[in-house]
Length: 143
Image 1 (cartoon, rainbow, N blue to C red):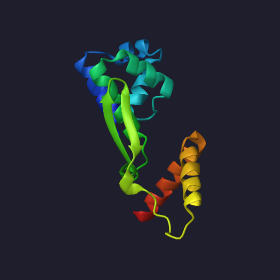
Image 2: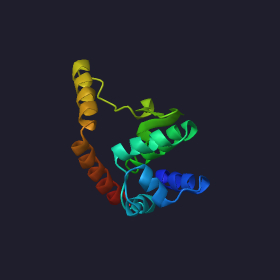
Image 3: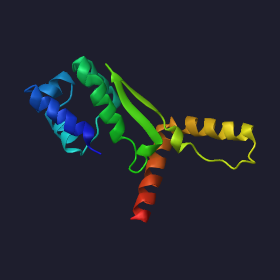
């Protein structure tokens, strides 16, 4: 679950970069970089974009993929296929094996509307946060 921060720390070591050096490149402070690496704070999207723009092409998609993977709620990784495409792209697509099962008698138009609504709802950060909370509570209930 902490693949991104592990890869980022490895990248810093391999390139002999200090936290201070990375902080300067990303217009952040060293304490913030330390928090990213420890997992106390997650890197924001704007900072991630800056990071992706400064790393070599062969590292871009790997870092982006790991960042996205870390944001998939526990127990839900089977719902998507995620892979590095190359450069600064990673592909995130629904896993067809995880398609919801609807009753056979359900109207096809209603099925399409439910899927459309679900996809739109998932784009909202507030709804994503709510779903994350629900998944976490459900996971605790199973334990």
